[in-house]
Length: 193
Image (cartoon, rainbow, N blue to C red; front, top):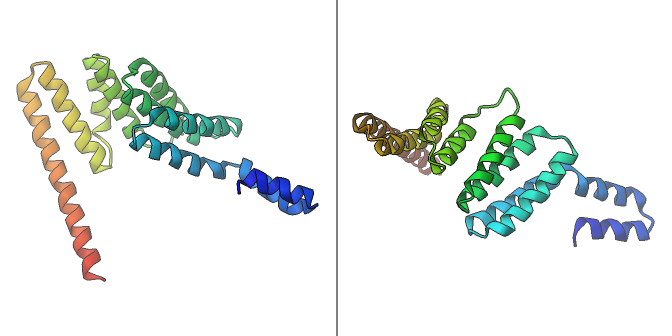
């Protein structure tokens, strides 16, 4: 039973306190997690129109509550959908909004990476390099590795092969480090079972 339907039943039964609680829970930001989760599932399945529907619904709710953090996250998610659909101009406009709405204290590395990737897809290599170069400073090894790999691709396209090789070598080292960390974690988990 959907939360709004349950709310209607409680209203008819004159159990207003329960109806009000369910109504508030349904209309609160709590619904953003499941909406984003559904959208992500559709995105993984490459059902982009369905994913966009859920992301847009979540964005409407986040906008109505003036939650800039959620708006930033959802703008980024929508940007990635448009990027996957090869609609790079739309993707670019959403990633710009994502960065604008991001809290000032947040790490923007992942968003800079996506902005750089979109600019790369728009064949704006110098701008792409600028943003992806910012992303490589991330504290997240996965973002770093992806950034160095993307920088390799850009430099290779620009014909700067010596720089390309250096970026590629760094990305390989980072990917190896990530694998080593995963193996250590797995080993640790297996040891403590």
